[in-house]
Amino acid sequence: MARINRAVEYLERGQPIFYSGVTELGFESGQRQASTWADYLCIDLEHLPFDMPGLSAFMDGLIAAGPTTTGHRTPTVIVTLPTDGSDEAMIRTNSWMIKQALATGVHGLMLCHVKSPDAVRAFVESARYAFQMSGVGHGLEQGRRGSGGQERAAAVWGVSISDYLDRADVWPLNPHGELMLGLKLEDKGCLDVADACISVPGIALAEWGPGDMGMSFGHREAHDPPYPDEMQDARRVVKAACDQANVAFLDVVTPATVETRLDEGVRIGAATEEAAVIGKRYCGRRD
Image (tube, one colour):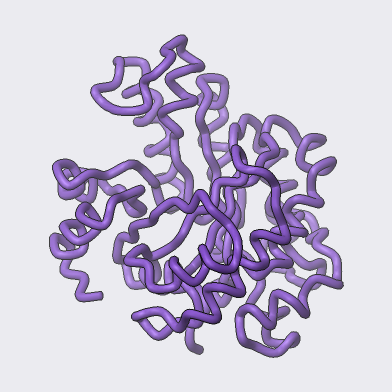
């Protein structure tokens, strides 16, 4: 079965992936990004307006200027949500964000400021249809994504509605799923529950969010290295939890650090094109 989500395709092969951020929505922006070098595009709706018409137009622009250089209909698109993952009630209240974003045809979601495994569980359940049963009864309840948005999303993916319903599940919990759910553990208050949060079934990736993590320790602008000792310790906690749960660890990579980060086990790099080229060459990737 050909993959819709090329980021999943590479991770399944054991290859690291690299992403780029998008700060502008709309049809023309999508056209410009259709030939991106990145394995996936991250759209930060945590800080940008929660613009679903703009996101839908962006996806249309990707299709219009596609396919990608790898032959996929569009690049993988992952959206960072504005709601916090502080507790289950927060996610249940704001689950409409999850459902509306997925209905635009994006391929994944990131949850910010995660502090509660119950919030993570609610996040996963909100992204799944009720008939998707992998993991149900083993850390998850039935999904809560409602019927109605699948027609638009299926059209974006270029598949039938029936095929979309089969594929629109969370990977790697469902090996045939195309959706990637990720976590940002970016506050010192999350470190004691990092293992429990990251091990919730249905999570594909996680990061430690150095900018916000630094602020939680009282550092105004510690987004970039060198990091204070307490931040280095926080990074180790989050990465160890990812390793334990076999969840892809995401970190910033630069041309100077990408080889070291890959050796450390970073599987997803927030990168420039130059850093990605170096990283792909270092690990033997040819595409």
